[in-house]
Amino acid sequence: MDNSYDKLTRFCLYRERCTSEVIQKMYGLKIKESDQSKFLKQLKEEKYLDDDRFIKAFVNTKIYVKRWGRVKIRQELSMKKLDKEKIKAELLAADDERYIENLDHLAERKWNTLSKKNDRDRRSSLFRYLASKGYESDLIMDWMKKKAK
Image (cartoon, rainbow, N blue to C red; front, top):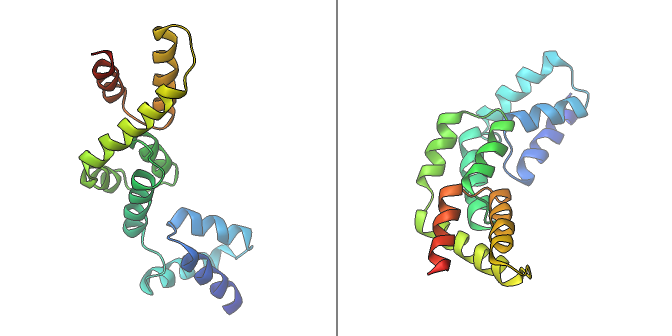
C-alpha cells in the first residue's frame, strides 16, 4: 500500500496533476477503490495535488508556451472535469496583450506559408488553422480585417 502511495506522489511531483489524472493513474495501478479516496485526501492535504494550482499552470503553459487559444484550453480543462468557474477566472486573468501577440505571431507565420492562389482560399485555411489552435472566431476575423488594409 505504501508503494502505491509513493508512486502517486512521484506521479504528482513530475508535473502538476489534477484529480481526474490521479484517479486515472490509480486505476492504472489497480489501487482498490476503498483506498482511492484515502489517497486523494492525503495527496491534497500534503499539497501534492491541487486542482486550482493545476488550472493556473495549465493555462499559463498553454497560452505562453504552446500559444493555444482560450477555446481549446477551456475544452481541455473541461474534459478533465475541473470547475468551470475557476477555469473562466484563470482565463480572464491571462494577459490579453500577450494573447493577441500570440495570435498575431501564429497568423502572420501561417499566412506567409500559405501558397494558395487566391486570397479567399488563404483566408479560409488561416481561419481553420487558428480555430484549431483555439482562438475565438471574432479575433481571427479582426486579424484578417487588419491584414486586408
